[in-house]
Length: 313
Length: 191
Figure 1 (cartoon, each protein chain N blue to C red):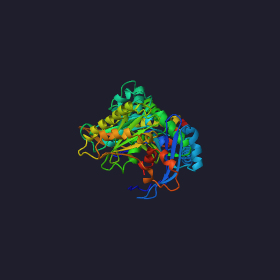
Figure 2 (figure 1 turned 45 degrees about the vertical axis):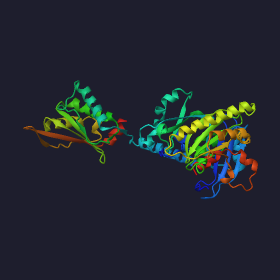
Figure 3 (figure 1 turned 180 degrees about the vertical axis):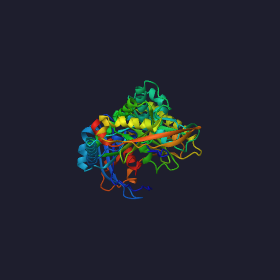
Figure 4 (figure 1 turned 180 degrees about the horizontal axis):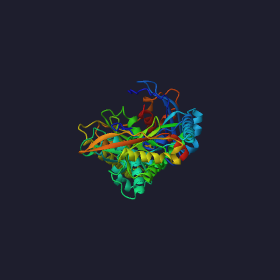
């Protein structure tokens, strides 16, 4: 199913802080085994209570990862994301022009010293979404501090990317000619949607949060509202595509397991989407060797961590 | 970095260069070794009288014209000897004050010679002052006065009078030059 290029760097280390300036981080170590073969999971570490500057060095020592090249995936809470019309200037000048191009948007934000980067939106999009670019803005000192913490743990930071692009890289083979909705439900049941088409990041949307403690009637309403919102976003982007693609959804995150078991949730999904639309969960063993790995580990590995490894593979 | 067509960002790349390419310890040591060697070489050259001030042609011309104007007390016109050209674009001069001294002396001892061009012969470390003199006699007078001055007498001041006839309109003009040697020694002494 996958045709992964062998990474010249060999072992790939991906670090993902839960909060750029707070506690919690994940670390994934994978090794590509050649084209068409699954990735080998060499190590995984997750600690929700320890911050990077305290815990990472110990993990690096334990796994003997010193001086390995590393990709840092920033959590969505650590930066702002918006889309802008692509300026009509040569591509190699766009990055340098970002502070001016995004000036109006930046003024309304509370960044003290912003660091900006951008990428083109999916070329498949026409109409209202044609010729757009995604802009990501983070606080310069936060990103530097995060990089310094990883470096002080003796890892070499090659890439600092964001959740959306890592997820798009992770889903690239599943999203061939398919508009994918990747729904993350976190532990507080706050929900977000990343849309991916042909491996390209299309859009990020916040979704209504879900309260599983609510009464059945309220749950019916919130699930209907939830899928209505998802449907609305999908309709908008489908209307910007030349051809209507098949639609599929993947549920992820700590809170997703509870929702999957909820028949009312899947029932509301069926009411909003045609029979062709699929609602799936991701099986990481499709991309990674499962031998010798505890089953519990698969449910803990965040997909943007794996995406970070695939992003520049 | 410049391939903007790909969907990728990298905050490391947009942060300053230090965050992208942190030099390794051997690279830092090598850099310090190079800086140390350059500083040592510069010190050695300075102690041997080779310290040089790099001036471009325009700024040197401006400085010398200022000197001339200060000496004559009036705005120097081209006809009177305003420096119109300096021969070497990348001229390295020890000290513009040296030429100022020379021009001061020349001006003090002669009102009949005007300098129009300075040429530097780097290999022989000679300086050629070319100018209009009213006559060879005027130039000889200047030379005989300059050569007796203590600033030059010990170090050699040779006159080479080159007469070149130029036609300016219908009038003939004669250009004269003289060469000052031992410039390097003069520099050392003047420092």
